[in-house]
Length: 330
Image 1 (cartoon, rainbow, N blue to C red):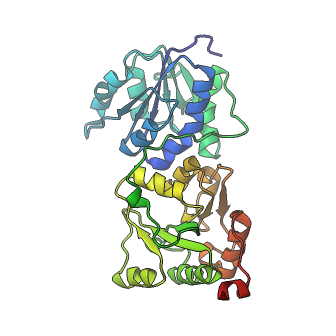
Image 2: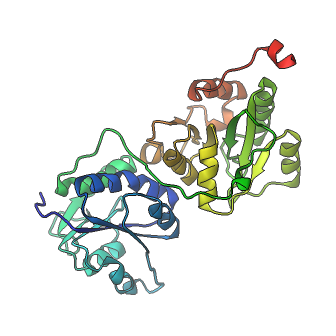
Image 3: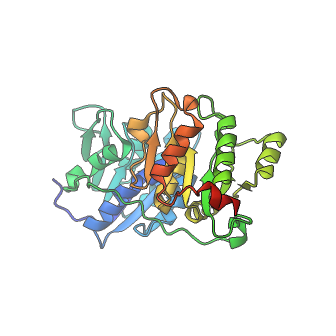
């Protein structure tokens, strides 16, 4: 076990939004055990934005990547200067990342190593893990520091405020706000017709305002947009991640296919139903937030009925109370 108390810790975490959200529990545990240390995050663009919102992080640097991979250690050396501990936060061995860590010159270097022999890259190589959840895998990297995986995870973020006019839900004042991310661009997920039927059912119950949040990759047809507007659905087209996070915070519930936005909802504390297709890697990337419910029915999510979804909404969202018919007629 490492007896040195690190004063400056760097965590290199690449890839997408969800990867950085899944790294937040590790960052929190490091801050808890080393309250005086500087914590530096080196990440791709999507991860950098999330890392800047973490109250545990001291510095954030963009990972510099060249087409000529052998240049990456030199390009990122300045971001790692002065660190006495560098952690390669990845679920397996990555030789290019390992070379960047070695080039940092840090006394303590931790990462996964494919071989059981002494590592050419890490002072404390960690054996490759079995197939397990990504957060559990990351906590293996803290074992040399005497830090165990906690029973509960924290995904704390301080989300910057945005223009409130971008979060307006329309005329649904006093109503509960249910936010949806549609799956129109993904096969084997919940069909669009089921979404439209669900929206009709929810509006008929009263007391619920439905909103749809478009992702950058979503391409709604003119017919779909018109159908949603006729049903009184508020369509949001957020321009950046801060707007997305604030929109999630403004919602009383969220239903979405698995992906990075679901992980972000864990940090905003939004009660969420996550839709998984039958071959989705739920064991590795399933939601770990108390506010989340993963749905991966054996029959396939595309076969899940609107009635079944209504029942699930009743159980997951504590505020959901269906009005009596005579109440709705008044």
